[in-house]
Image 1 (tube, protein in one colour):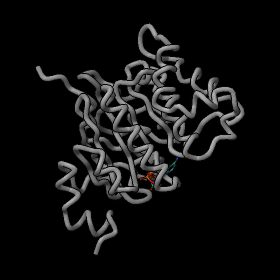
Image 2 (tube, rainbow, N blue to C red):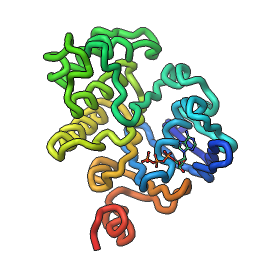
Image 3 (cartoon, rainbow, N blue to C red):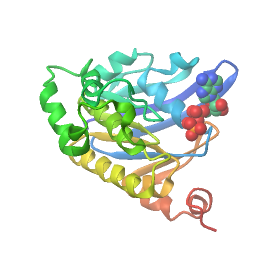
Image 4 (cartoon, helix red, strand yellow):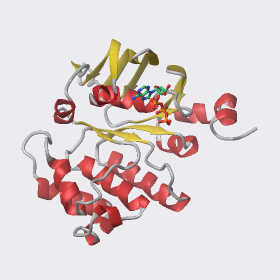
Length: 244
Ligand code: ATP
């Protein structure tokens, strides 16, 4: 049987009376990079919360559908159990612990990692990807620039040695050069064997990284296909790539 990655099938999510997702299905194959595009409020963050098990902290719940990874259910799992299975979210807004040092932030990321963790080796790998974090290891995270905080947020997630990384708008608010560096790093992380589910408003960047993409509108997938096909679709170009 072919190895299965992350699969979301017919997912419905509500926040009280608000129906945030209405039957969303998508798949992230092992080793793949999959992008989810969509405007503000489309449900992108909700989708990641439903996968990572953090929905309950935001007053939401899955009312139908399933999430599974490697053929086993993840639906309703506790966030720590999801991390333990190798599915790790980098939250939106690069939420690092600003009063802790860079090194302490990374150490926090190793808690709950899969199997026998070699935290030192994981940290070396993070420092190779982001040398600036090694230079700033003993500085408070709050003193880092926005781009460096995003690097730290990704680095912290990598400490759990994810099989799948869930990235929520990693380039939001960053200058183009820094966004390009983050994009390069995502490529590198993927090349080292981690699958990526990338939620982005920057459609051009997301489509350049992904092999497959989905467009989410008001809680529903309205378009999906190979990223190159979506990038040349008139609708995507008009609505998400700012072309006329
Ligand atoms: P953004 O890019 O602004 O984060 P998004 O595509 O990630 O947008 P979500 O944040 O998932 O969208 O929001 C989807 C819908 O769910 C929106 O209608 C939003 O108002 C609603 N929503 C999100 N979080 C909550 C919450 N904690 N309580 C109630 N409604 C919420």
